[in-house]
Amino acid sequence: MFIQLQYARSNRDRAPGPAASGTLECVDAHDEKPAMTIPHPRVLAVILVFLSSPVAALNNCSDFIDLRSRRNITINTAPGQNRYSPSCVRVAVDTSVTFNSDFTTHPLYGGLVSGGVATIDPASPIGAHNSGTAPVIVTLTALGEFPYFCDFHYTQGMLGSIVVDPAFFDDGFE
Ligand SMILES: [Cu+2]
Image (cartoon, rainbow, N blue to C red; front, side):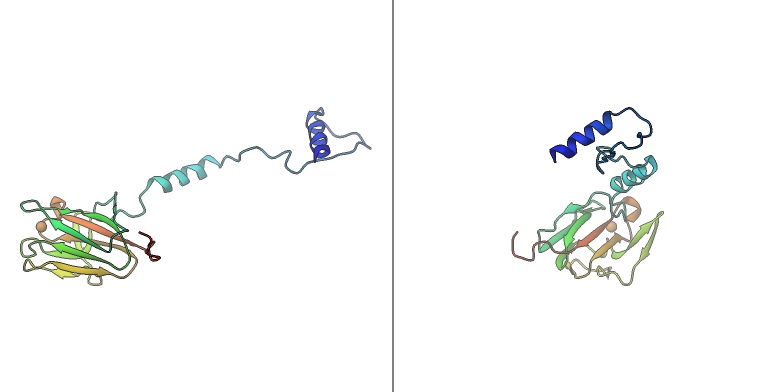
């Protein structure tokens, strides 16, 4: 090892130019490698854009409150306020979500609001609830993102989204 380093050093210190015939060439494979490889600027830009953009951003959600350690969560509608609280949440699979609201005055639908247009998703596990004040309890058994909105007030910001991640606490360590 010591001898290898010595050769490498003398090889590096040698004046540039072709080696004279008969000279022993000892090239350490690592000797010519830069200490750190810097990606091409364009590659770097793509990486930065990827890192800075949220994983998902449906229904005005960019920051998701991390509630993955909970088995049950509640999304409330504050009286007199046309919004959900919390609105953007990240939960573990099989989490039970309780919506507390007056669904007659705040019809709740699973679906996407994009460009000011709300589209009900009939396949959403959040479903459709447009009457009464009984709590709506939804258990989210599939991975993915499930946006939802109030049909009367989504233009006022009464909308949100739930990201369902794999359960990280299945071993009981919570
Ligand atoms: Cu509403």
